Length: 265
Image 1: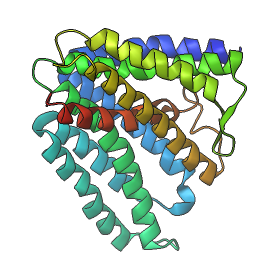
Image 2: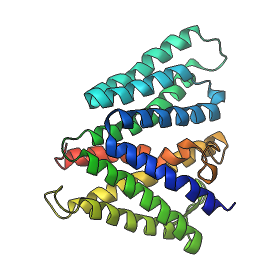
Image 3: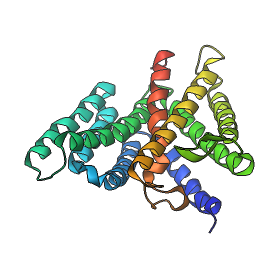
Image 4: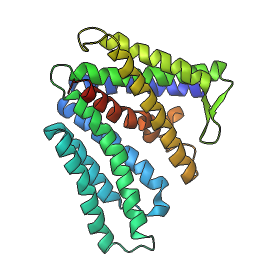
């Protein structure tokens, strides 16, 4: 089975599930985000097992952050995330490991902050009164379209490597194709009835696209540091769950703060 076919077999039903969860919102979106978060954290902590992360503390803080975002907004989300620190200190005090306590706690907090706050931001966007559904769907579709066109354009016409060391597969041709289609997707979805200025959908789309790229590159840097190509094999040609979430984990917070700056929150 080719990489392109295997990616399509996962992407199409996966997109339906994700968009459905975002459309319904509420506890449906929380359950979907929680399941994805636990799978992604499992992959990350497994890859970084030499760092001896305090896995239960990371799981607990991440779920608490997502729950806080669902029921109380950004303050409760931050409070839930900070539970990671308390649990990490507690478990570090009783754990028997030769790893540095500082390193173990840092690895734990990295995972909970990266995954928990990243997905929590998408929940915060969905909870925006009146327009939250359209905003979160715009983020998801923008990232999906940009990622898809960047991959296809890179495979067909990619000649100039963007970051040969960090992510050899990415090309400038793919980035340009993905960025243009991603920004146009955001504009098409939000051009009428959401922003006061006609240029704001373009800026919003640009922020989401650039943040998604940074999220992808950040995960590539982490995987390179840990000596692996993919975070897992759960999603066939897509790799692991973390490989699928990497762009959203940066795009979600960036989109939320962009909306906040534009007076939409």
